[in-house]
Length: 300
Image (tube, rainbow, N blue to C red; front, side, top):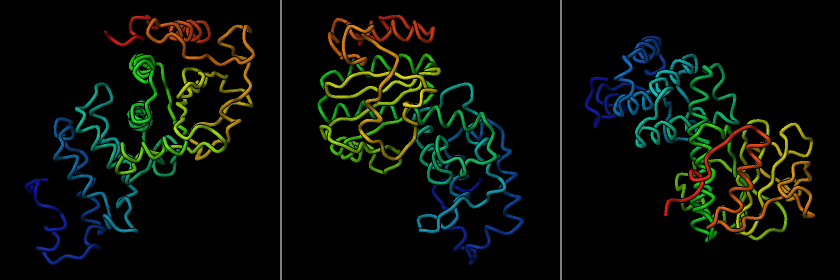
């Protein structure tokens, strides 16, 4: 940890004529565990994070790359994430942590084996950040695919997210939407699902859990749909693919109070807050969650 940040552990290893197996001996294992006990103010710094992540990866950049010390998986995740249980890190630190943790442990929202034994607080923190990143990716896809009400969707759903009401998020993409994500997420870090079936290729769906209800917000003139998570027709989050019918499910939850054949909400009157008010009132009635309408509208 006292080495200059610009000097890599591989350089140090080669300088001392050591093999890769050196990092797996008992001395190194214990030294790694002791380094995880650094004071919180140290663990919250970018040089510490980068060094510990470098130390934790075995065979970095090769097909056999893996987390070097599975026995310390919990302590490792806790050491890096615990400084941020009660506050948000600078964006650079958050991005670095997510990139490193995804490459070593996988996505905690669906790769449970990679996070086996890790304390709930650490898993919840990483999952919350990934939920935010998933939502941001969706809104960036809308920008790249010319969804004309994308900014209104972003403002609406981010207000619920920042208020702590959105617990999970997942995205399902058409072909053009997936291509757009590739331009946004150039490192291919973010997982997503593909939509199977005949849709406009630029369409995509933002799947959100608030309380016990799943919301599916279809882009590009699509509707907002809602269904109880306990309903047999509710699509499961974090699948790799969805058939079209799974995302256009029959549901007892009707935004239109039986006045239309389709229970989904059309995004009409964005500038006036028309659909936003209907969706807000629905969420308030169904879940007891209320966000001021002014918070749901973009600032002029």
